[in-house]
Image 1 (cartoon, rainbow, N blue to C red):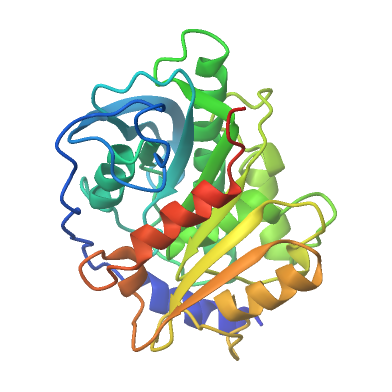
Image 2 (tube, one colour; image 1 turned 180 degrees about the horizontal axis):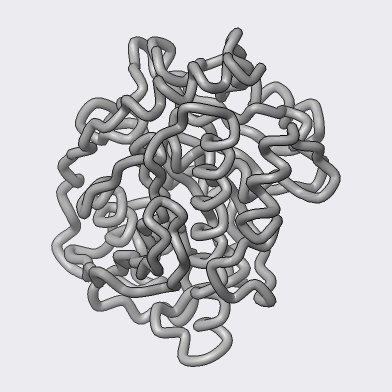
Length: 319
């Protein structure tokens, strides 16, 4: 397993493609809940607001030993009057070694115009993934940072609630490395046994709660969006855990759709295991799609509508 995982890590580290896309045409004017009963499913706002470089936490990155300001950009509908809105915390890919300022912004823009609040965040990067220890360290740094984003919103919602977030409707997701991160955030718990390298990396990064801030703040996830992701242990899935949407290309040569000799279990395997454990799971295979397709609205125009439908059908709607 160690040499297989390292081989996979090299593949993921080499994935540094930009994710560009164009949003769908907006409606002509903003509408409130009464005028647009299908908000969250359809585009109902003509414009969105993008808040850039908001600091959600600070933490030391063992890449250089320096304290790093961790930032996010938040998208919300312009002119919205709803008091409580679903939140999607979206984590881009980049093999845990690279990020860009605008990756997946097209997702934030389109989902905001459907009424969602979307936070796309940076996480601490790593130099390489050349061993199982480095792979797990990169993964659990990212997991710690993603949990800090979620808790930032939950804590804010208990006070000023700047973005009018409904803490009963929190979704997380991401592409590639961001999907790995989201799957571990949602499904890894104290019942699961990690390999020695994983256990050591988890402990070094604050354990299951992480160490990037707000560790005492509790949260509940409504659902998980997995775009071209995988895990190393399918036994993480237990009854009663969040519902899962997986979108994966059948020509993905970086992360397997099923299980691979490298010890990875991709979306098809995750879907089967989740269902066998009583977790509601949806799998969309992109025919002819490669690793990038699920995160590029130009190459997969059906992916964003599917994500909206998944969240719309999964969320707790106000009575």
